[in-house]
Image 1 (spheres, helix red, strand yellow):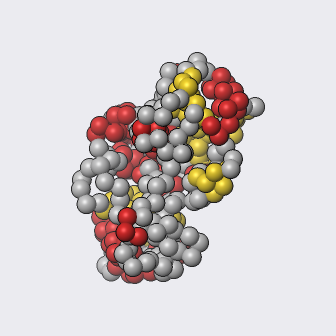
Image 2 (cartoon, rainbow, N blue to C red):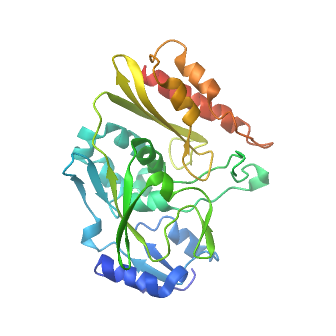
Image 3 (cartoon, rainbow, N blue to C red):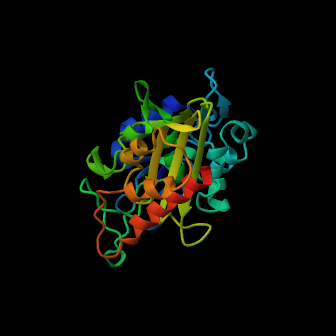
Length: 308
């Protein structure tokens, strides 16, 4: 393993101060399911300084917000969210999504912030998984599954910086590959910033949703393609829709064309197939990943049919 210096701060302020001092050479350690792999393999991307935030009590909680939404602390594990009675009662789609993340072992270890913030590792095995670009190339994305839920629900993420706090929407947080502090990463947070909590808005009356994930095995595997759906039904018709694809790009891919097509229509008959046929019209798959387009479309059709 690559040698490192370990810090164990007692507060968020102390953690951000350490990160600010060491800059890009430091990294936050919570669940460690991604970070430890980089350290063990002595990758150049592995940090020299580790800031362990697991013992900061202000980062571990699940609670209802004054507005009736949900706030989840950054170091809360996926399993803790999945097993929360509050989450089961108010956000069953979140539980459904979390049950499909990796394996039980990793869900016990992985934190909600870490699953959102993990780096995307594009797979170049035999050229099968080229990186996504603005032109629409598809990629085997490793962004955490819970990102798609928060994106489809319009959640926001709060983070701490050395001189204060801020908040950002998930789509703005994970735009795809960007240059930050001299390195390419999938999110826009700087090296001295810590994600502190995830806030989900209150459930909307008349909303229904589902999460579909296609993968070779029932555990461990990343999605070949996935889709998170959230529909608002008004007098039997779809009043509003959010459609977020996963596993096909380096960021959650929102399908605005399908959302516009669904609005005003009744969720029955051939609508799932018609919507799927309109999805990913601008995708430009390469030789070995054409199947991702049809897999994603099939996941969308299955999700809509499940909600019908």
